[in-house]
Amino acid sequence: MGCSVSIVIATKGRLDGLARLFASLKNIPHWREIRPQVIIGNNADEPGLARAVQELVEGFGREVEAVRHLRETNPAGPRAKCRTQNLAISQAEGDIVAFLDDDVEVAPEWLGAVRDFFASRVFDAMQGAILVPPEMRNNQDFLRAYHRYRTIPFLQYGADMVEIRTLTGANMAMRRELFSRVGLFDERLGPGRSGISEDVEFAQRILLRGGRIGYEPRAAVYHEVDWSRLTEEFFRLRHEQQGRSRLLYKRNSLFSVISNLMRAVWSLGWFFLIGNERRKYRAKGRYYHYRAMLLEKFKKFKTFNAI
Image (cartoon, rainbow, N blue to C red; front, top):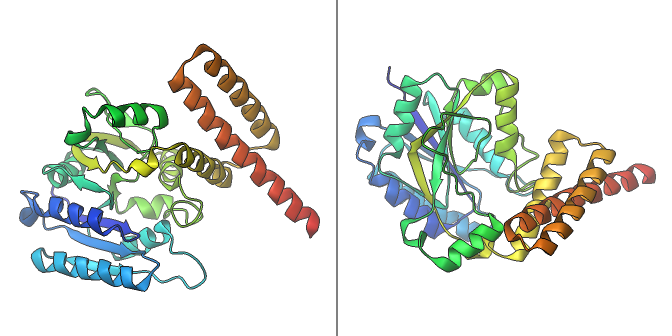
């Protein structure tokens, strides 16, 4: 059974990355056979940048078919990724809706692997591999920084991995009918709102409603190495975003937040003393995570008492 595909790409205006992504899509051998629909959600805040994104999309559309530019305006606040993705879902015509970030490039077999996965498997959603670019695989500066921070979402499970329990939004796909069962993306989460975790929360809803998520290594993308993400500052900000985001949908109790924070502090001290850098940074990330949760709890408490 064949499956039609819609590709959704939300962008804040990373023009160079978007151009590289378009170039990689054009290099897919089976593009004209599969004839996917492409929806670009233009979330650039600055009008000049938004026009540049639109021009880039229009140029791409002149070379391939079925490209739609979606300019989401939200005068009440910042343009959020989840809101744009939800609008794109309402316009998606494919049986399968695939999501790509604007800082990846697809492997030539990506589109065929997405189509074949859903045509032959029973899963509701698919996670594709997110790989290190070939030119960076032996870069020792990158490998050291990535080993420490893990703040770029590279993802590659073992060859025997078939079914998983989470999603990473840079390269994922799902059956369009799934949204009628589990709902759309939570617009409180993700870039432009809480900053992160919209993919993880969506995956949890899939599982809660009896859905299944499969892994397809052939549906691979290469993620850009952004050195600004491999810093102490970004590491802290990312884990604080994660803490605040997960508090929104997990609703952790104050007791659990404090106990996990204390455990993280103890672990951080222990791994610092024994010199285990990877475990030290894992504990440090949990410390930032639960500290942000605790501060958010206090903020809500003060707001409640001020009413």
